[in-house]
Image (cartoon, rainbow, N blue to C red; front, side, top):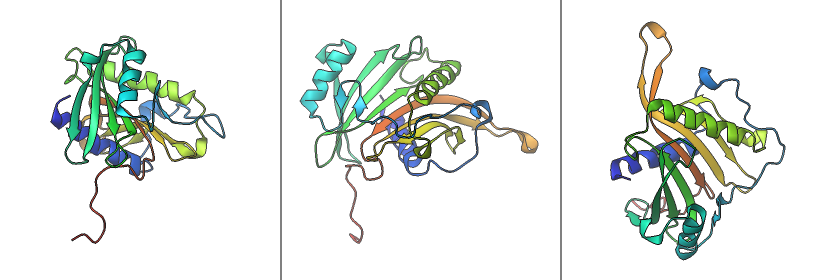
Length: 222
């Protein structure tokens, strides 16, 4: 994944994790149920890659989960957050949904898995179209709607400055999952409905979303 796309995605994810309650419902999804359980499942990672795992354990999980050789896994450093990121690209993670880029983020202090970000974009797969991003988003939204997350900790169908927050929820420990469709928004004249042309679909899982293990200057440092 190129650095501009990664940095843009980090800003979108961070903003949405903190500000999920703003905006109005997106008309195209306004009738979608978001959850149907009072308790809801735990959010502990993606497939066999669990929060708190070491880099070596996550590498093994990636190879097992996607039947992919170790040579396909990349490693980069996020200079701003001072975290290590393992990356892999997986075709048809959503069937016929294009190639997805999966990033596994390891904490600044703990060096353990703290987040997993999954992206679909034409910058990752040139064959990905806006219609595919819409379809992937709706497919995943319906999937999470059926998972039984707690209604009082779930929201979605919210217009944002970047696009549409399709789904966001937290579990009882503060771990979170977020699904957001972002892109270019064209405002209609005379107060008409704005039109979103999506360029990125982001599915993000985060441990302790409000207090992530990333580098930050402490208050009063300057």
